[in-house]
Length: 275
Image (cartoon, rainbow, N blue to C red):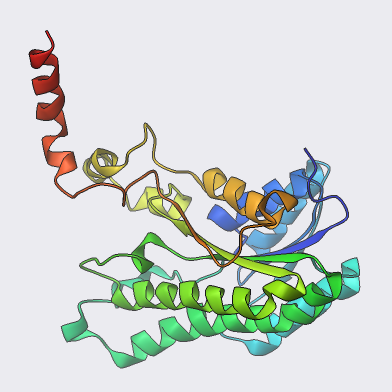
């Protein structure tokens, strides 16, 4: 299936993880892809891999904290490919040391809060702002923003990250409201637990087993699971979906917290009753 023949897509944060998987997926379906990331060597590796597989891709350095680099990313895309139909705002500030400082509110450093919001929320807004003229000119375009399950619930850590992603959820609805009638759809994919290389390094056997107890799926999510949903939302298959938050989380938010603790005895009881 080649749903993106003749279309150009920008994927930010595409040097690894969900962004890289999405860039490869869109290219495999015919898109010309701009692989954008602050990590230019990583982006180049992804772009070269797409080319080796017969796809079309270029790598561009983009920094969420640098307005000029965001504007240049869009300008390079339009100059190189002649237009833009898909924007996947996937990049976020995921520096481990920065996330470690995103702690309980009682101990929050306002500078850390401001820095995370500046990159995640302002950066997403600027990428959208600079891309909109080209997206509108196409007459039929899609924006897909990557949020997080942390935007829809509470946790013991990373309140700034979660709140910044909640802001992206609401920003998405504003963009959908303002530009949907003009041919630009805007939706959110909200990942749950996804096994990226970075996540795998931080997840030992005990933590993995704990996570599996809460996921209503036989497997933990992979970047390719998100890429498939992004591709659907960005394609004509998603043409009547606008302003929505699509959770791709294996059902982790679909049940009461106690389910993981009582599931084993529940099934033992069910089997005993029907023996």
